[in-house]
Image 1 (cartoon, rainbow, N blue to C red):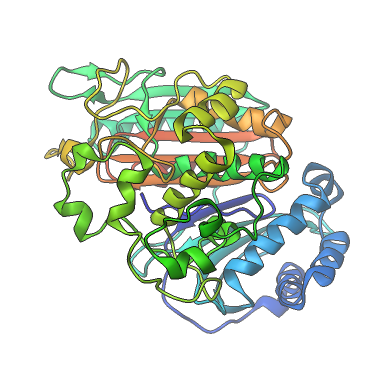
Image 2 (cartoon, rainbow, N blue to C red):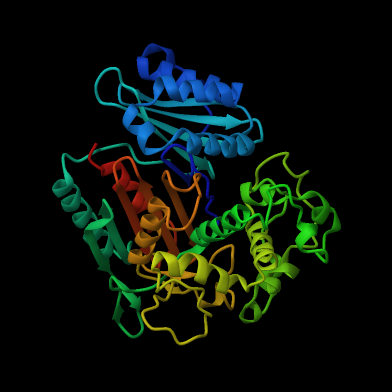
Length: 454
């Protein structure tokens, strides 16, 4: 379930990238020079980045994503990355530039800058992808289709081919202006009983649940019940690691700079997973371990940190975490099919997960906890996730400027994968859910994004 949730200009997501190579060719084109100017402003500070946005971003994009949102995201990026420098130039074109960059915190990212297709080639948006490893080919090259009809034909052909080869099983939904222009289901929700996936099937969405937790924290911040500077100890005085309780703040937890590690570890493997049913049941898996680094010093993906955030939501709201997100996020958004379902519960329209290679898939039941958490493992449908996007865009879920301007989120673990890509500038959302191993959904969603008409 290791999928980061960060945001910038248009989309923030997680993928892998290739090896180091020297920077080259940026200064040879107008688009490349804008990228150089962006990186210089990024490192210089908030005033410089605001001046860059004012001078280099298209008017349409500035209307779509206001300056306040851009600056909030910049601060989040700066906290997670520190200063950045180019480590590889992947491609330079008049309408797009792709680079890989290293942050001073140790984090590496792939960045794709998208520009207008005609002079003066102003900036439309930036797609930023965390580098997860060296064996991934990175995002697919852009190959935009001429219109929605061509896009749909391409997606349909690719999905049918992948499903026939047992490389995809799930649901694909593409929406423009909040309404689906394509949606289809493929494969089986239950292979033993031969139950097919449908548009109403509920899939395990992995770490996409972290976005609900992040939103819950931000809603409580807006109500004055939580501050980014509050420590774990303020809400959880009995937290097993006293050093973490005193030093780690809500801001650290949100931005994954806390030093708290993962709970998918040797303790989890040895545990009776069926008994892990509440947020507190997760704490013995990680909470007493030493911090991996001084809070704020660098960035590290942290499932454990989002368990702690869920417990803070409970303390600050006075409600059970599952009840809070249901009443304050799912219900207002109209997400009737989204919840954390116990794995042994009888649940209609739930896809079972299958792990392993095509043609030799086995159920993932034994790898799952008794119930998902504030870090991941809940269930949803493609249509419910579209409702979530619509609610964020409309402001239905409250003042969350860092989440309303677009994002890319995903979750994955053995037998489950889910991805949501939302571009408010083009008013398009891509949602892919799968009951197979990653990158069944995230990889296909990335392909669809590369095919979107300009």
